[in-house]
Image 1 (cartoon, rainbow, N blue to C red):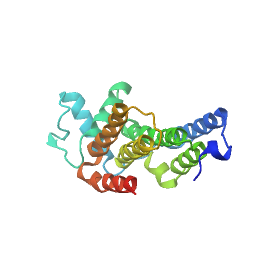
Image 2: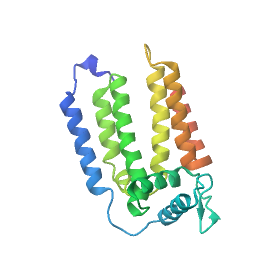
Image 3: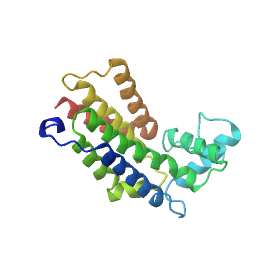
Image 4: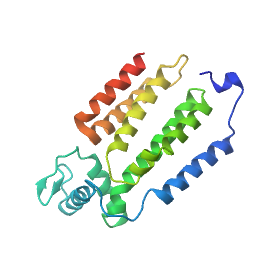
Amino acid sequence: MTSDSADGNHPSSPHLTGVLLLLVFVFLTLSLPHREFYGEEGRRVMAAREMLSSGDFILPRVFGEPYLNKPPLYPWLTAGVGFVRGEVDAISVRVPALVATLLTGIWLLWAGIHLGLRRAGVLATLFFLLCPMVMRKASLGETDLLLTLGCTIYALEMLVFSRPGSETPMGASMFRMVLGLCIAFLAKGVAAVPFVIAVMLAAAC
């Protein structure tokens, strides 16, 4: 794929802004429905409530027993949202997945701009954020979209940093890659390993 600078197509700033505003509007209106807890959402709400009541943010617990189904990132985020809102409920447990989804879309757009592929960045953002499975999971308190965010940050930062003529400072690039890995592993644990290896293999190719 050639860069936008080469083929002369430059989506205007209002176009990019309009796309982002439209996507934000769609997610805010569709992603936090009023519904019963689904899957592990109830346990994550209980773990977050116990964190806030006990002050123990190291080991998530449900009814006093360790909750070790997943690493603690999602209960941490749920507790943080609940603390700000004053209540840990169905909305609190779904906000982290929604925010992770929006951040992934923004990161795709950012990478496209920095790679000189604005049109590709816009299309990637649209395809990701408007994917039915992504839209469904963005409305649930699940860890998949945190894993997606972490792997996306890691993968796209590798692409931006390794491109010829890159002026990205090594320290900033390494920080973002480590941040992506931390998000992925604190969200999914060892289940993130195949995704990270796949990203490394794709970058090598």
